[in-house]
Length: 276
Length: 292
Image (cartoon, rainbow over all chains, first blue to last red; front, top):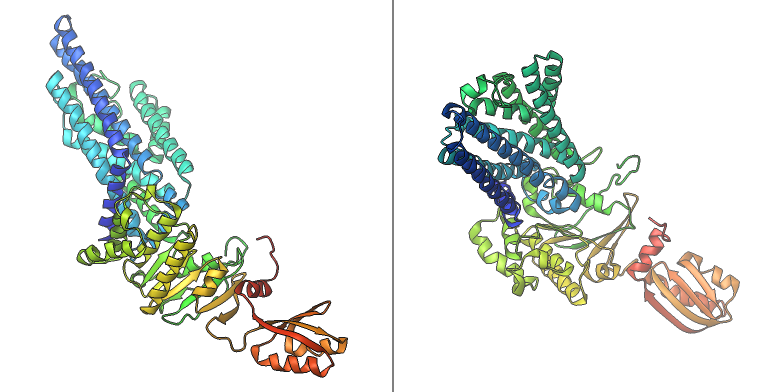
């Protein structure tokens, strides 16, 4: 019961503090720009000599870029909205009146985590759904395995969320933000290095990318999502930056799941044992 | 322990049910740490803290405990009524009971006109009042109040005092930590003084027997031998011109002091006993400010 009360209050906090609405308005702005861009490209194709087969691949690539933007926005939104929730309440003393109520600390932490998970799920559903709907209605692009893709992007956000919670039980808000954004940057760089190594067959470059992905597997999850969602032909032809040249394996996705569980478990353990 | 500093050591407090218990000590004495340990917010480096017969880590015992933290803070985007509902739900109070209890508590702390205002619009005093209400929302047996009158004007202080006494009269035990010794003096039944994490002494403020009493006397023909003879009956003696100020060990020795002065040839014009204020008692027990 305590978990759901905390989850509800966390979700309501985001809504009342306008974090959620600001993120949604920004997201709608993105969808608007993306839709206009896609529309212009479709209109330009009417007067161009580009063959229909290639037109579809270009529009499909544009949808993938749009989905990549959704992925980045979702991960950053997840991190920025949750970075203050544990450390900020510890420092301000807000946690004192709650932690002295008859509920365990793990219930407080998991409840807050669940509240953010709900918020992230709503955000990903709207943004992801909006992007593939625009791709279909404006460009005629059919996104492959959209449910897999959406779940993987959502999964990536929960990894970022769990890591943010974990460091939030140790560090101040600012330090936590720097650490998590640093890790996300490392994952971003590592993911692209690994992808580049696929194009160039650079084994040492791949190793750097793999190590980065092991330290923070969020970007690897996105690359698996991209593999699932793009048209098989685009991936095989290496037509886009998300081509199937270095696809994270299913064991890697399993590793990311274990990584999430460990981060969340460490967060719970440390929050249970630290002084407030 | 915090680093190599011992915050609290072998602290054992006996608080009787239904009394208002004052917890006193200089800054850094370990008062807040002690309260946090009793509430399970801080874990002892060694040993265990018990409250209401259960370990402080026991989640269920917290159903019987209320807490108003110092500088009470909460989600400022909630209204006063929503805050109490949330705390009531967290404490396990059924929704139907909360429907009656929330408006009653808001009325009790004098915030009825502000019940639907967000806390971000509240003054510090109003936050203290709503904080007190949240500590009472589940009708606990024991309530810890950390500086409950902080930020309140005199009317607010009186209101908090009246609420505390009313809760005591209903059988609730109140554990009060405050720097305002005058508030403690007129509110508490018993006080304990702690320093460097250990109990120094305690006082029952309801009893006057055996308590030190300050006496101001005006007398002529005081002799050195006469004043020296007061030592067994007093803890401090100060003479300035014809004025003798001393601290008698108890009210019971006052006739002996007067008899002794007269028997040594002094002409006594005035002999006025004055009960030591809690502040004076505090200073005499704790010594001068050590800049903590």
